Image (tube, rainbow, N blue to C red; front, side):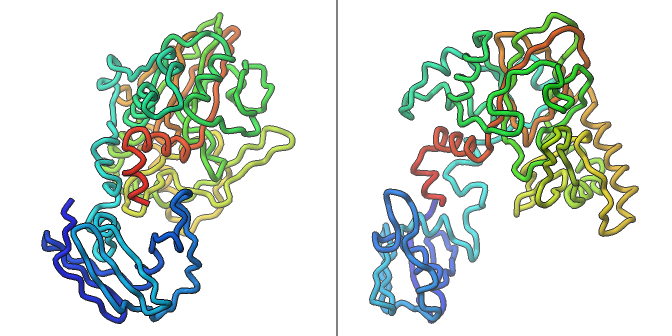
Length: 398
């Protein structure tokens, strides 16, 4: 990353920096003052602001500007305060214009955390897998977490991972979950251990066929990850499928761009209301495709079973377009090229990214016992980045 400063020109409102790579950046004085990281303005141990932004003079300007190979030093006309900015930090956070794309703000993130969108042929003979015993041997020291580092990266890259050699017990499965991250409690409980006895009023607690979906579309904060362990099954059926919804979204965008656009725009109300004392709905219904500010796909929320009555339409002409989009979408996600079926077995867990991978279950007979858990996405992404990029690179980007 080119970081050398060739020239720094202060004005009453901005400081314009000319970089050695012929780029220029403009920084507002008030923005620079607000982002001072001296010990009076920032608590280095906790990485939290101490400065009250409302106390900054709206017309603040520098009285002295100096730069070296490593820093930009400014003395402000308010309280004669001195601020020092790391050159690499300034370049990384340049906003007018942005010099480093947002997806690359963490050094090497785009390369190290690249995702692989797969079809059935890509993955059927190369399922991402880790070993339970290696995971459990990992310590709390970052240097001793190589197995968990590899595990988080596989989940992120492929959207799922298998875990082999897991003892066939809920206790050991829960220990495995806790090695990855905090278990998320919901109205289903924290760590689940369940059969098809309808102890909870949800189709997951039956033996009927469940089509491809993501869990928790009725929550504002959809679970990030989900882990399953089949502990026992004495019947037939119950086969699981996985679909890379990001790969399928790309196909939809290429073949049916209008349907893709509908899925990015139309809000979908959802609910969980089977339990007598539960009626969960998101604060604000979200579209099926959630995009980041750069227009990149961030999440797919898809669950036909939990969709509520759609009686609020900004434009009623969107109604036939919406149902056409569903037809296009179903044809893609149920295509054998995109949906892989896999028989879970005792001793092997499956964990998947609930924002990216669909799962399903075919109808089954006999007694079937499952256990598992939900995980929050933000906590997982924190673990992923710290282990695979390093704490310094992550902190530099905030």
